[in-house]
Length: 163
Image 1 (cartoon, rainbow, N blue to C red):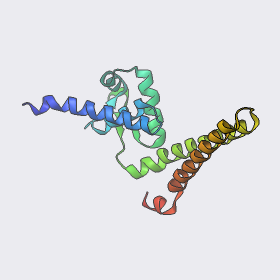
Image 2 (cartoon, rainbow, N blue to C red; image 1 turned 180 degrees about the vertical axis):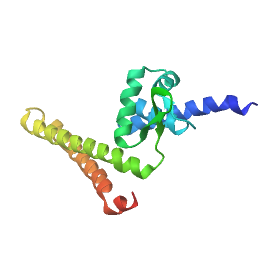
Image 3 (cartoon, rainbow, N blue to C red; image 1 turned 180 degrees about the horizontal axis):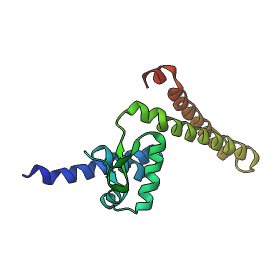
Image 4 (cartoon, rainbow, N blue to C red; image 1 turned 135 degrees about the horizontal axis):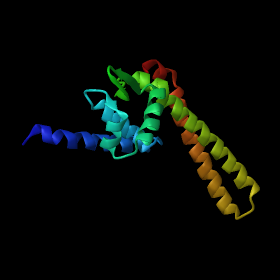
């Protein structure tokens, strides 16, 4: 068996896993795919090359790359004699978490808090079956408890010290 022939398939399977992982955390699939592709690339890659490898538009890759760069997960690289944009993965997990992932998760948790609060207010002001209202109130309160727990874990001083 030719080892080289298996490498692209292995890379693409990991790229897909990166996309699914990003989605599971509420981030765009393409961002996870792009990061994993760059992480597994020995050399910086151009936007055109990335778009071709992932089967998406260059514009989509450009947006995802800019977002990842804002988080500190990838960096733009200059290659002498080439005017195209090239990117490489940042492998310092601490920098990525503190630079973008944790703030983004914190923002999503705050958005969820506001939505839960709004829905609780709607449950109270809407007419309707008292049993349904009680059920919805209980579920929303449970969702808020879980949201608070996750937020407190992210904000825990020990976690911040580790990261």
